[in-house]
Image (tube, rainbow, N blue to C red; front, side, top):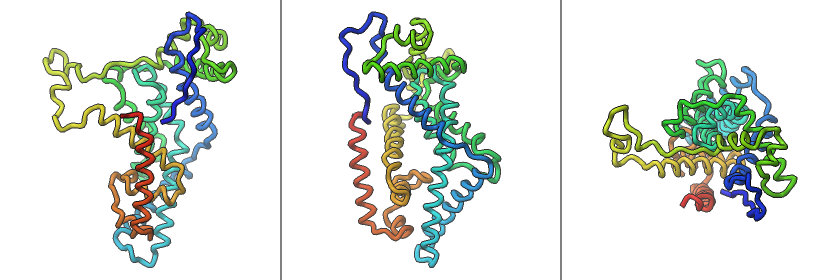
Length: 319
């Protein structure tokens, strides 16, 4: 992934910690994220149900087309499938602010807010696929559970009971905005003194707030299974289980794949999501997708190979 780079400041003031520049990218991301999600209109109950019905119709059409690829209603079913995918994306987009609302409650649990938001977004995507408008009145009530579960899975075990007061979270966001503004104005990372003047907080409080964001914990595999136990979690993991490192990489691949596909036309995006198992967990074959959309297997293969090449380039930093 592309990361912001900042030149080293040879005249750095003594009260600026070495890690201060590491928070600037977080500040930039969060500021842009807030601006983006605040511009997205919320949905009312009727709109949510309408989108959910389109999603359901798309799934039904996909099943029908797989069972009868030669049907005379092929074009109508194809259009319904694509419309269902668009409805799912609209439902997800309209509820992205839910992710921040949940993520900021876990800001001091040892995972940066950026990562909490990314994990929460994956939970939101999962929620959209699981939503049943026949049983649940509001999508938001349903989605919050999935978002929280996704975030909790990425937290160190010992940090899951910790919470950040809402006022502390607001103060952290204020500091991030100050860092963003000062960096843009001065073209270099600000010192604690400059951030202090900008926010009205003492340098000590600024430092404490920033430490909330970057504090990390060691992995909990060495923690006892229970109090008094001589076994730790690492002792009882099956040998064939994926390593924590591989789980992290697999999750990162999925997130970056979603990002790559987001810029494609909806029809192409739908085809590729079906192949990569991003729709219902099933990896559809070239033959199945070809019969669904009337596209040659060669064309699908070419698109898949292009995405894989781009994904390999994106994942170089994980090696």
